[in-house]
Image (tube, rainbow, N blue to C red; front, side):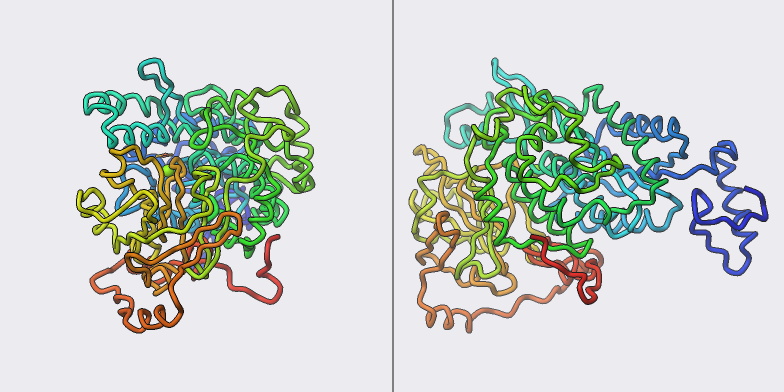
Length: 579
Ligand code: FES
Ligand code: MG
């Protein structure tokens, strides 16, 4: 490019702001580009931005720098200019009050940094729970060619001959400790063997589910979700992603070419077939929303009834992500359900889904991925509930629940907040029995940022008598690595005065998985009386900055907990129901 060349639409010269002197703007851009020491030939190639999210607080991304180097190799080998840039990093284990509060912040960061900086395509590198949805939400809104690259799961550790992986086994052993089955010394030893390598949680938790969904959507390379963080495959996938991103930059294909109603439908099928996390429904809804698409929860149930669980991974099964990778990964799953998928959808490879799946073995995997005809379960894991206690809906992971509790009416034992729960759950005088329903209020998006508090602990006095599961209800979420008969995402949340706010100790509640219903068995006139006494939602007194933004604009779970202002402004015909 010469000094007088007008071309500003591609590469490092795009997006120049000239304030009236275009030549000066280009001259300044070149001045700073030269300072990187790269040749002018390289600087003039298409730019592949690489959004990174490393942090010492994010152990799941610990090996990301090496992975980013592999992406750069791929971009350079293809003839492009790789330029890495940082965004905020959300390490699940270290964020308070809850990482969920910061997913939308990261999405804003990613969106605006893609938009603000000169790049022809972007590779989104991340893995921990909220990272993949945040990166994809941001990239979808930025309308730039994008490709997801996950950091990969951890390998398992060993303890007394048993394989351990974060963090389903974390919960299993903690339950044993609470039930006085193992000592404090043993739990101290277990703790050191649960997360023994870099990478995301080793089971089909939220991180693994979102990685699988990115692949199922066609926005990540086929076969890329499952390779462990420490596996050489992970680096090869990084390099291939760099090459693919360069081609994507040349094609100019933005996410809306890839993520369509057909690919969302495929992603829901895969979510169900892998027995994926409840959180994924919130994230997929938010991601779809950025493209003007929505998910109809009622039809989720239809898909759930016709999609078997084929993957036998913890938290609901036996194996770990490294086993799924060895068994052929997500392509093996998709090939088993290919008759249920839309195979004509585009992917970031430039080929359609049929062509990419044909490149993978269609049989021969072991028990980790079951054949369609011999599923782990005949129906999908997730079920959307509605009823008088949840007019906006609620979610249960039936594959992680106890079937004997599926059709049950119980007495409510109510905790009015997270603090109330913490103070009283282990009180020996708590009036609670095994058949009761534990109810947690005020843990929804607006009240508390929707923490993973829906996995209420079994009261110690019951745990010590061997009680392992109870019906638990809340407007919170639960970790994708958790299990139990747990009804989540009840909407509208307590803080918005939904029926959950009206529940009192001793009320009867009926759960029916068969009828997909959740009913508060209190006469309407009594509910009216209670509603009249309900205090108006507390104003956001004392809350400023991002937390104020979150409080004022977060949507309910069935809308993906995105910000109302982040959704595209609907014009006639653009907001459509997905399935
Ligand atoms: Fe990062 Fe589980 S803590 S994936
Ligand atoms: Mg998690």
